[in-house]
Image 1: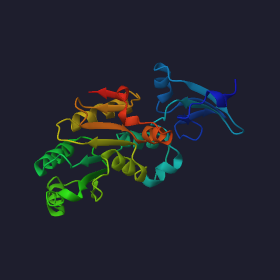
Image 2 (image 1 turned 135 degrees about the vertical axis):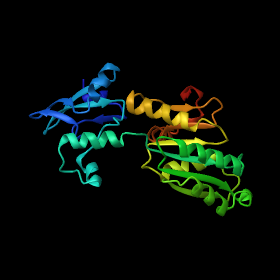
Image 3 (image 1 turned 45 degrees about the horizontal axis):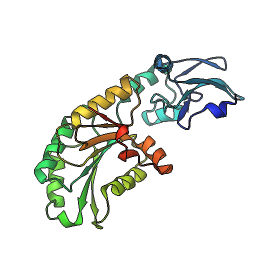
Image 4 (image 1 turned 45 degrees about the vertical axis):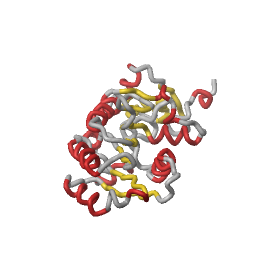
Length: 253
């Protein structure tokens, strides 16, 4: 059978990963042992080759451990030994996510509470975007929102996005944000006040980075806080599929 016929659209070739272990030109292991984890979970590992090497392809999954040497340049470790690269990977091996908060149904006190929850998360977001609408700018003046971010001494990037066209649906706003923010692997969307943010983040991080599991959408009971893969979202959107509207995609935690 032609290998091209077996490869899922979503896959990861190990060939250029710094953690791929080779005996001459043939890969025989993984320095962070993810191949063993995938095998134990019955994830398909295809044997592939080209003119340079023989290597594995993790089929149907984006391997979170995949790192090319250029990734280590930002830490000055491009010429470091493998042990130092493994150490750096483990230090940075945590959920990479952006939070969007829809202000339509919230009060300033609600925003205060949500930002307070975020400040307590062991794994902080890289960015937070508040979605403010033109008809409630007086309710959410910039100065007061800025004061809330300063109150929690945030290390992440934050911004306020004001929507002028009040007929714009939140789903369309979210789609636009995902399209413009490709570097974030996960998106946490909050549409009303809840107390579940820290729990959802910890659960998702453990699922992804310790159990190496996949998921569609993780949600609290009333779907006011959901987290999902931006990669899967964009793939589904490209194929004109309503990813966030399918109840079967949701895992309630």
